[in-house]
Amino acid sequence: MRILNNLLVLGLLLTSVYSFAWGTTGHRVVAEIAEAHLNSKAKREIKKIIGKQPLAYWANWPDFIKSNPDWKMADSWHYLNFPGGLNRTEFDQTLENSSEENLYKRTLIIIDELKNHKNLSLEKKQENLYFLIHLIGDAHQPLHIGREEDLGGNKIEVEWFRSKTNIHSLWDSKLIDFQQYSYTEYAEVLDFHNKKFNKTLTAGNLNDWLYDSYQKAEDIYANTKAGDKLWFPYNYQYVSTLEEQLLKGGLRLAKVLNEIFK
Ligand SMILES: [Zn+2]
Image (cartoon, rainbow, N blue to C red; front, side, top):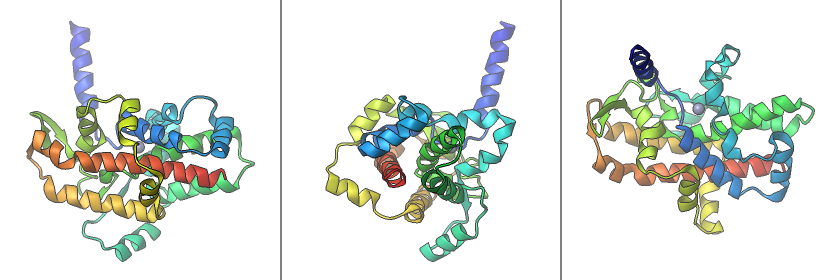
């Protein structure tokens, strides 16, 4: 009984810790969609680096290593914290002036290393690839491009079907888990559009995609307040945004990988 109590306490402690990532399912959906859109050259090259397991298998590795002190410096790679209300010019300036150790700069570094530094060790290439799969996912969770003062929504507490949570965690995992798909099912039901439509979703570059997520975050902030009791209506309001972000994340990750390994 004591062990059970200790486990319960530990569980409560762990769930109250701030979270900074799409949940495991979200990252796998993004990776699974990307996998289906890789060209054969990229597939071959990626296999040489990470072996036969699907991208989805590695999608959460950068979260799993967070407890390792050797990777402490990578904690800030998963997100950007911006003030609210920036227009596009201000947003781009803030990106340019931001730290090397954030989602934007680190993603650019990783893309450059994978593309132009073929002499790096296999282990380094693997780490880069795991991070890229993961970070392009995080770039599409709107609240990873959230505000500094509330830690991307981590400090905005709400109820989700009567249980306490915060809006960051809601968007990381609770909204996804509510749909009750496995990651492969979710990838399959989202990824049905024709090439022409998909092309509209992958237009632009990382700056454009981050600004897109930032605008989604602004909308979420405007419509989700501390103390809100959220349930079915919120799901109805936002499930299409959630699914659009997962699909875009997957298609854009494929675009980046095809471009790296062309
Ligand atoms: Zn993350």
